[in-house]
Each structure stands twice: as C-alpha cells, then as structure tokens.
Image (cartoon, rainbow, N blue to C red; front, top):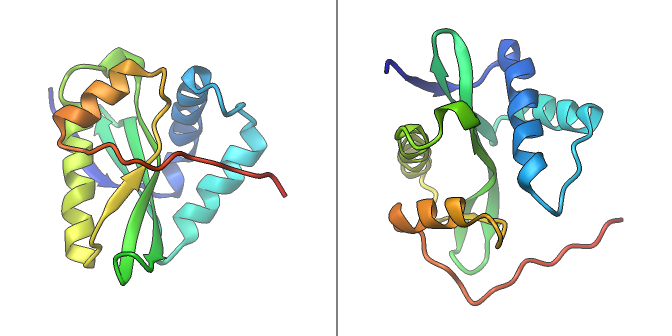
Length: 148
C-alpha cells in the first residue's frame, strides 16, 4: 500500500473533520460538533507552532495526528501534546498508525521537543495496546478538565 506522510493543509479539512467524527464516536468524553471541530482544525492549520501530520492513500487523507507545542516547567522547554490521533477504521492494523506516529516523533526531535504526551481513552484497548507497542509509557497522572 502506497502511503504518503505529510503535513496537512487547508485542502484536507473535510477529510480531517471526517476523521475527527470517527474518533469522537469511540471517545466517551467528547461529542462531535462539526462547527467546533472545523474551527479547531482551521486554528491548527494557521498556527506557526502547532501542526497536523496526515497519512494519505490514493489522494485521500486516511489518518491524522495533531500536535500542540507547549512549554513544560518539568522539562524546562518545549514539549508536544498529541491532541488527536486517528486512523480511518478501514485502514486500521495496516501499520499506518505506526508510520504516522514515527513521523510525528521525528518532527518533534527536529523541533527540539523533549517529550510528547497524550491522553487515551481508558476503554480503548486497541489504542492502549498500540501505544504500548510504540514504547509509550503510562504515568501516575490522571487527566482532569473543567469547562469555562
């Protein structure tokens, strides 16, 4: 299978929204709202520090990973927060997620980021197994949030 890994651009937006819809269907903490997700994707695409890496097959974006750059006092520098990581269901278990995440890790190193971090749904065993195979480590931290 011929896969191209590249940075997303504005012409990918409808593919990205569809991927987010697929992701949010399995996430218990999020509800898909096309207007909000479109606005978020547009902000990411316009950002100088944050970005979206995609996997493309036959001119179709089939996977995406968003990276937000933040400053960590623990690391004393910039780190990356992976907000969304999703592979279209029809392309799951074909090594595309591995290629995508490896590309994100390489870019993070090139940027001088010292750590990548993400939150995963505790009930998404497929994702947890994948991250474990990719050498991601669990922490003692738990995710909390408050809407403002």
